[in-house]
Structure formats: C-alpha cells, structure tokens
Figure: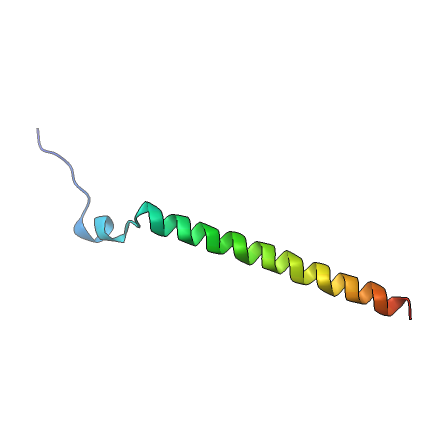
Length: 51
C-alpha cells in the first residue's frame, strides 16, 4: 500500500505552531487595542457632552 503525501506546496505552506501562536497573540492585541480606542473615544465624547 502506498503512503499518501501532501504535495510539497501544501506541506511548506503549513505554519509551525510557534508562528500560529504569534499570529494569534497579534490578533488578540489588535482586538484589545481596538476596544480600548473605542472606549477612550466614548469616554471623551461623554466628557464633551457634559460641557
């Protein structure tokens, strides 16, 4: 029985676990930063509305 293997292009495109982990952390950092920016804008808008 012959062993089925992925083509070289597919095998080389698979990222190592450490790289996937770094990309996930970058996504988390982006989401947290985006939420913080929106919270800051809402806080400033609330302060301006009180003027």
